[in-house]
Length: 251
Image (cartoon, rainbow, N blue to C red; front, top):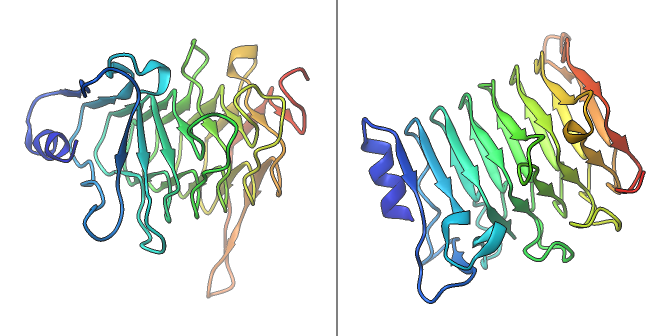
């Protein structure tokens, strides 16, 4: 996987990274400190990394797991544009499960972040998914299998900081995979802060609904950040609609 990411970073063409690890079935890739170095930052554009391609792996064919403690690693870091991350289970990282750093037009769909089996807490020490700058990305979706499960982190499930025009729909945040039991993130389920503006969380159709429930903090939070000069960087023009907050999948 490391070599494939490096190749995609230097390619001028669109790239699709798939998996075929024998024997068939779900596989775990250990990523961490020491001998297991952090994966390369994805800096290329028009890159699809598709874990559902692993033969016999099902909807989450590849688990990215950090077995080390205290290294501060992130699972996947995206700095390019139009990158799709699909079908991973991402667990136990000391940083974020997925960090989008000034990337734009990314698609994060069909992943389990913070649990490999849908019920156990194997969350990240920081946020499950964090956007820092950039924008126009999609987390989840209304189509079959597009939503993410984001639970068990020691901070926010999804944090959007100084990032604009993102869409967050169809996700389960703070619950088990069946949507019936708590698997909480320790802070907010979904948080937009700084100058994060024109983001949409949820929508009018049932398929766009996020379930942000069971978290130890607030379901969906907008948070201004006080600056040293006394001014406040505050989110504006964000839309939150049609979500289930504090309710399980049965409503």
